[in-house]
Image 1 (tube, one colour):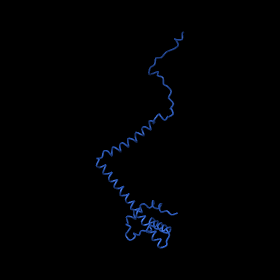
Image 2 (cartoon, rainbow, N blue to C red):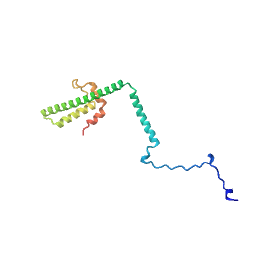
Image 3 (cartoon, rainbow, N blue to C red):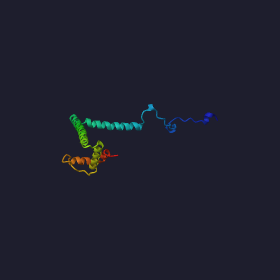
Length: 156
């Protein structure tokens, strides 16, 4: 008996395929790029942005411009209101300090009195309309923002 009698050479086919061991995952390097999950998430975000842009672009140009114009007008109105409010606050502060100086009252006392009155309004104790110069809608507006305003007028 020879060696070739004991050896059997099997031809390669699908039934006798060699299965290599699974590869160990390699460490991600900077140049490797995003993972599949990261690429899918980025694709999802970009798709949402593209859909939003397409929704805007699907509108007639006149409608897009009208919305932009309305937003610009509203922003300008709020900006003007803010300027008017700051001007009136500065003017009233000046009047209050001038009158206080004539009466011999210090600026600290004027500020303390202002804080007392502000807290009275915030706490609902002062619902006086000051001879019609404060509309009920203004008091309601103050009431809606009480929590925020209390932080602004907190003493100590």
